Image (tube, rainbow, N blue to C red; front, top):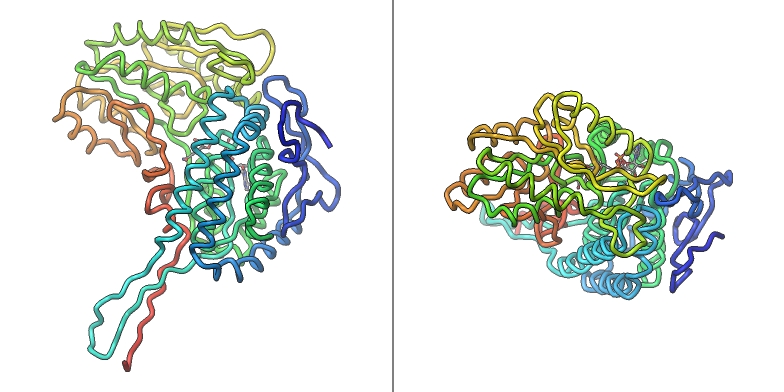
Length: 486
Ligand code: NAD
């Protein structure tokens, strides 16, 4: 077994899948290497679980569902509370595992653990509030009771960019509702998921309630989407894979939650507080090296403040420190893999070929999988980065003249996840807030992620919402019980 140096609790690092309470290897012994993107070294190996083993995980989840659904809500809440406490207790180890497999700076990884844990706390609280309703019936001898029941076995498929929080945001409401889960974490970042599995066991969450299947996606995904026992798929990742899985779920008509890609506009109007807008743009654009679904992809700046904003942002970006996430003081870690770097380079080269100018570029260390943080001036709609998420530390500035022009360009995308705008005008705030066709809109802030607010997109950014009061509804059915002859 591989060891990660620096873990206080080495048992959190598991190189095995979790099926029905047993930590197992692949039937045929196949494994997938997981590398540290900062060094390219192999961190460890996880089993490449087969379709047949995935079926066994679904069956284990189904057996566990028969009893977990009947566990009183307060007890389910208590189990989630214990899991929450353990996540906090082991936050440093969880953050270290996350940084080593994903790359983000350790301080950001700690932030993600806190954010991830906040969903467990929130849905522990919500577990106690699942209730139904009594509907006035059309005839006097009747009652209509609406009961809330868990959907059933849920498949949870998650990306590499938030290896902890994208799991808790789904698993916590699922468990609170009485569902059981089979998690398929990204093959790039399985160790964060497995560490959560260890802590769930310690929290006394029964065997089979949480199953984790690791490995390459196609065989696992085919089983999870094709198996009729799986009643729900909750997916976070690219629009391409999300729509593929949606199609694979169609024959068995599963419930779906899809959190997909974005192309967020970040609009700075002439009347904005420019320093606040620069802070917001840094947080929104460069967090996680620009590898977030809600990160601003197009920065729209009104002509009157364009030069001043560009200068301030460029100064900040030039000073950014790029390097391993484990080294304190680094702002940007390595990108997740070589194709990610290729896409970033392609977007920058295409933009420059079409007339963009490089206003700032930070230094990057020699070797390693790093992308330089860049500010591009004179960006235009014809550039590839205007239509597609770059998923890297590239900030293209688009100049605009009027509010209408900005809103029209902001909405001119098949995506609709997050949007941001900066203005000091109350009237404009309402007008633009209503006109933007996005699931989440930030006014004078670059951050919209919190467990208490609905998270999700419109258009090709997805279906459903996570977090908030409504997040648990994704895992509940409403059964109408019509009682006559009373
Ligand atoms: P991805 O779509 O490549 O992969 C996501 C997950 O799907 C991974 O676990 C992957 O292994 C799995 N997968 C891939 N092919 C599959 C198949 N055939 N069957 C089953 N599973 C399969 O996305 P990614 O590169 O890991 O993540 C980045 C993307 O995620 C970006 O587009 C980003 O915008 C999006 N994202 C969205 C949100 C959101 O909340 N809307 C949050 C984070 C990331």
